[in-house]
Amino acid sequence: MGMNMGVNIAGVQWKNPVTTASGTFASGKEYSNFFDINALGAITTKGVSSHPWLGNNTPRVAETYGGMLNAIGLQNPGVEAFIRDDLPFLAQAGTNVIVNICGHNVAEYVAVAEALSGESVVDMLEVNISCPNVSEGGMAFGTNWKMTEKVVSAVKKVSKQPIIVKLSPNVTDIDVIAKAAEIAGADALSMINTLIGMKIDLKTRKPLLANKIGGLSGPAIKPVAVRMIYQVSQAVGIPIIGMGGITCSDDAIEMILAGANAVAVGTANFANPRATVDVIDGIRAYMEGNGINDINNLVGVAWK
Image 1 (cartoon, rainbow, N blue to C red):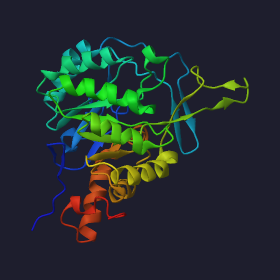
Image 2: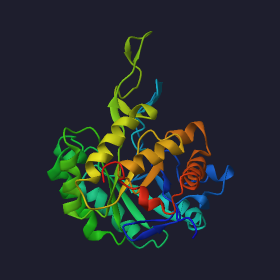
Image 3: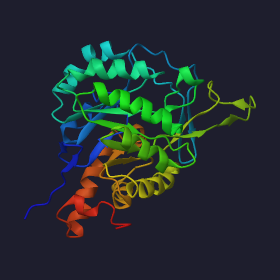
């Protein structure tokens, strides 16, 4: 009997459990110079908003021990430009396409989802609820369960694609947010997004980032991600895409054992453009070396 690396995420069949983390892979054009991106289970795009976002002032990236800080501000040219410039390339990619969507308020999220609902190239939407809700004083949607329910239910009503809700780790109890997203109609979850951090320049004695704070990603946050996946996978009944500090196949397998049905590689792409395919190859080697015929048999083994 052959080995199965395929996973089903909310009714969408992936050839393997590896995708890219939003904001680290653009739409794949640049990375296609290094490997055949059709090898991926899915491509998750950069964040797309209803209208162009300029992003934050510079400097907005800083290296840290075990990772990096970013305060890009979800800069993007808007959904019309995305449909015109990126979707034709993604249509030829040969794998599933997940579009990450963002907004400053519920209406903006809905507008993006509606604009993409008629695009057959788009297989799934990833709803980034770490965006600040400007109508509610800037609090991120993903830090309050009521706000989470509000945006997820609104997007679910207009989306023709399954929706993945990307959870913020900057909360007291992530189980509460995860359950709220599930109740509101989320078909899957992706977790975790970046942790809030800061770096101070010793010469200027001021925060290095123009935005003062930024999102910490990379290997430093992996133990937090594993713990949260372990918790949430026992609290909800929908698939989880694990992310946060994956640099190799061992990291990916650890998240799957914790309860993730699939994984996303993010910051590692900046250091190694082939990080995603290296992870896929490593998972395959692990399965072969341990006599595992189906990747799905590893999901949640750490707690089942």
